[in-house]
Each structure stands twice: as structure tokens, then as C-alpha cells.
Image (cartoon, rainbow, N blue to C red; front, side):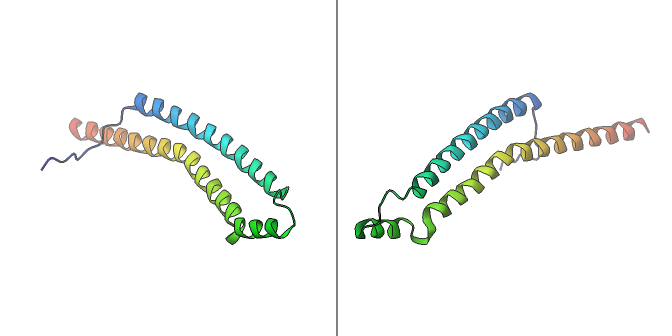
Length: 112
């Protein structure tokens, strides 16, 4: 069975990938905020009316606070996604720092 027991991190590739990821995540965050603000604005306007069919629609639409619940869950999901870029960046920095520490330790051992 073939196994890989090491990780080879190519810093330039990681930097390019994280740059694209960060840009895309920022665009998603902007679009998500605009969409949820528009949805909440429309819900606040209560376009379904106050007659019996309107009240029935509102009750079905807002069942379990569905739209607000989904907007809030989406906010957390998008927030976690935008934070992921910095977490990956820090993980790569830590891994490369450990590699440098191990290389230095090996150099010292070889000098003995």
C-alpha cells in the first residue's frame, strides 16, 4: 500500500490559492450581506397583507422563524468561511516554522 508520510508545502502556490480564496470569500460575504439585508427589508414591509390569506401566508412563511433562522445560519457559515483563509495561512506558517526548526536542529546535530 502506498503511503505519504510527509507534506510538501509550496509557499508560492499556497499564497496564490489563499489570495484567490480570500478574494472570493470577501465577495461572497458582500453579496450575502446585501441579499440578507434585502430579504429582511422585504419581510419588514409585510407584503403579504393583513387579510386572512395574507396572515395564513405569513404564518406558513415564518414558521419556526425560518427565514431569520436561515439568514442567521448563513451569516455564521459565511463568517466561518471568511475566517478559514487566515486559519489556513496560520497553519501553513506554523508548519513551515516547524520545518525550519527541525532543519536547524538537524544542522546542529550534523555539526557534532
